Image (cartoon, rainbow, N blue to C red; front, side, top):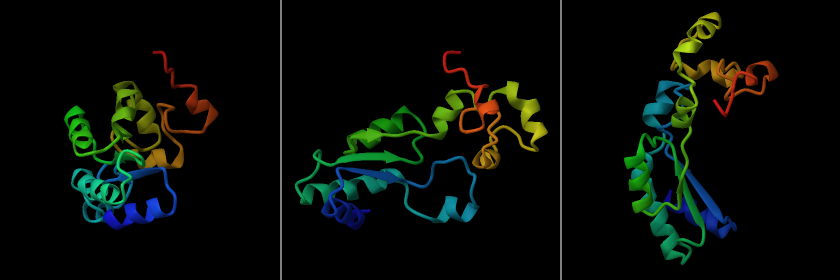
Length: 143
Protein backbone atom coordinates (compact mmCIF):
# COMPACT_ATOMS: atom_id res chain seq x y z
CA UNK A 1 0.00 0.00 0.00
CA UNK A 2 3.01 2.30 0.48
CA UNK A 3 3.76 2.60 -3.23
CA UNK A 4 0.10 2.58 -4.20
CA UNK A 5 -0.52 5.57 -1.96
CA UNK A 6 2.43 7.43 -3.45
CA UNK A 7 1.19 6.72 -6.97
CA UNK A 8 -2.32 7.86 -6.08
CA UNK A 9 -1.08 11.14 -4.60
CA UNK A 10 1.17 11.79 -7.60
CA UNK A 11 -1.85 11.21 -9.83
CA UNK A 12 -3.74 13.92 -7.94
CA UNK A 13 -5.96 11.93 -5.57
CA UNK A 14 -7.42 13.93 -2.71
CA UNK A 15 -8.92 10.85 -1.04
CA UNK A 16 -7.39 7.39 -0.71
CA UNK A 17 -9.49 4.42 0.38
CA UNK A 18 -7.69 1.33 1.67
CA UNK A 19 -9.74 -1.86 1.73
CA UNK A 20 -8.25 -4.63 3.84
CA UNK A 21 -10.02 -7.40 1.89
CA UNK A 22 -10.82 -9.24 5.10
CA UNK A 23 -14.22 -7.72 5.48
CA UNK A 24 -17.15 -8.30 3.22
CA UNK A 25 -19.97 -10.73 3.14
CA UNK A 26 -17.98 -13.86 2.29
CA UNK A 27 -19.61 -13.87 -1.13
CA UNK A 28 -16.35 -14.86 -2.78
CA UNK A 29 -13.98 -17.77 -2.95
CA UNK A 30 -12.10 -18.70 0.22
CA UNK A 31 -8.75 -18.15 -1.52
CA UNK A 32 -9.57 -14.44 -1.81
CA UNK A 33 -10.73 -14.18 1.78
CA UNK A 34 -7.69 -15.93 3.23
CA UNK A 35 -4.82 -15.23 0.83
CA UNK A 36 -5.26 -11.91 -0.97
CA UNK A 37 -4.26 -8.53 0.38
CA UNK A 38 -3.14 -7.67 3.88
CA UNK A 39 -5.20 -6.96 6.99
CA UNK A 40 -6.27 -3.34 7.19
CA UNK A 41 -4.67 -2.34 10.50
CA UNK A 42 -1.08 -3.23 9.43
CA UNK A 43 -1.67 -1.44 6.10
CA UNK A 44 -2.47 1.91 7.70
CA UNK A 45 1.05 2.78 8.96
CA UNK A 46 2.47 2.08 5.48
CA UNK A 47 -0.04 4.44 3.91
CA UNK A 48 0.52 7.10 6.56
CA UNK A 49 4.29 6.87 6.09
CA UNK A 50 3.91 7.43 2.35
CA UNK A 51 1.64 10.42 2.93
CA UNK A 52 4.00 11.89 5.55
CA UNK A 53 7.02 11.54 3.26
CA UNK A 54 5.13 13.47 0.60
CA UNK A 55 3.95 16.12 3.06
CA UNK A 56 0.36 15.09 2.37
CA UNK A 57 -0.75 13.44 5.62
CA UNK A 58 -4.05 15.02 6.68
CA UNK A 59 -4.15 16.89 3.34
CA UNK A 60 -5.12 13.77 1.41
CA UNK A 61 -7.88 11.94 3.27
CA UNK A 62 -7.13 8.35 4.23
CA UNK A 63 -10.28 6.23 4.57
CA UNK A 64 -10.00 2.59 5.62
CA UNK A 65 -12.42 -0.32 5.44
CA UNK A 66 -12.47 -4.09 5.32
CA UNK A 67 -12.40 -6.14 8.47
CA UNK A 68 -13.51 -3.38 10.82
CA UNK A 69 -15.45 -5.47 13.32
CA UNK A 70 -16.15 -3.20 16.25
CA UNK A 71 -15.52 0.14 17.91
CA UNK A 72 -12.08 -0.96 19.08
CA UNK A 73 -11.03 -1.52 15.46
CA UNK A 74 -12.35 1.94 14.56
CA UNK A 75 -10.34 3.49 17.41
CA UNK A 76 -7.19 1.60 16.38
CA UNK A 77 -7.55 2.69 12.76
CA UNK A 78 -7.98 6.32 13.77
CA UNK A 79 -5.04 6.12 16.20
CA UNK A 80 -2.86 4.68 13.43
CA UNK A 81 -3.61 7.69 11.24
CA UNK A 82 -6.81 7.06 9.28
CA UNK A 83 -9.02 10.09 8.76
CA UNK A 84 -12.20 8.04 8.50
CA UNK A 85 -13.36 4.45 8.76
CA UNK A 86 -16.01 2.81 6.59
CA UNK A 87 -18.03 -0.21 7.60
CA UNK A 88 -20.10 -2.43 5.37
CA UNK A 89 -21.27 -5.78 6.66
CA UNK A 90 -21.65 -4.50 10.22
CA UNK A 91 -24.05 -1.84 8.92
CA UNK A 92 -26.04 -4.46 7.01
CA UNK A 93 -26.43 -6.54 10.15
CA UNK A 94 -27.41 -3.47 12.19
CA UNK A 95 -30.11 -2.73 9.61
CA UNK A 96 -31.51 -6.21 10.11
CA UNK A 97 -30.01 -8.25 7.29
CA UNK A 98 -29.71 -11.36 9.46
CA UNK A 99 -32.98 -10.87 11.29
CA UNK A 100 -34.98 -14.05 12.08
CA UNK A 101 -38.04 -12.53 10.36
CA UNK A 102 -36.24 -13.23 7.08
CA UNK A 103 -35.81 -16.98 7.64
CA UNK A 104 -38.78 -17.98 5.47
CA UNK A 105 -37.78 -15.62 2.64
CA UNK A 106 -34.22 -16.90 2.79
CA UNK A 107 -35.41 -20.50 2.54
CA UNK A 108 -37.48 -19.59 -0.54
CA UNK A 109 -34.37 -18.49 -2.40
CA UNK A 110 -32.31 -21.42 -1.11
CA UNK A 111 -30.25 -19.38 1.29
CA UNK A 112 -29.91 -18.73 5.02
CA UNK A 113 -28.91 -15.88 7.29
CA UNK A 114 -25.24 -15.03 6.90
CA UNK A 115 -24.89 -16.40 3.36
CA UNK A 116 -24.55 -13.27 1.31
CA UNK A 117 -23.86 -14.90 -2.08
CA UNK A 118 -27.47 -14.25 -3.09
CA UNK A 119 -27.15 -10.57 -2.25
CA UNK A 120 -24.62 -10.20 -5.08
CA UNK A 121 -27.43 -11.11 -7.47
CA UNK A 122 -29.71 -8.41 -6.06
CA UNK A 123 -31.89 -10.83 -4.09
CA UNK A 124 -31.42 -9.38 -0.61
CA UNK A 125 -34.72 -10.28 1.11
CA UNK A 126 -34.30 -7.45 3.62
CA UNK A 127 -34.35 -4.95 0.76
CA UNK A 128 -31.12 -3.30 1.87
CA UNK A 129 -28.69 -4.13 -0.95
CA UNK A 130 -31.00 -4.43 -3.92
CA UNK A 131 -32.21 -2.36 -6.82
CA UNK A 132 -35.35 -4.49 -7.11
CA UNK A 133 -38.29 -2.13 -6.42
CA UNK A 134 -40.37 -4.83 -4.70
CA UNK A 135 -37.55 -5.99 -2.43
CA UNK A 136 -36.47 -2.43 -1.60
CA UNK A 137 -39.98 -1.72 -0.24
CA UNK A 138 -39.12 -4.09 2.62
CA UNK A 139 -36.55 -1.70 4.05
CA UNK A 140 -38.09 0.79 6.42
CA UNK A 141 -35.21 3.05 7.49
CA UNK A 142 -37.34 4.55 10.27
CA UNK A 143 -38.27 1.19 11.82
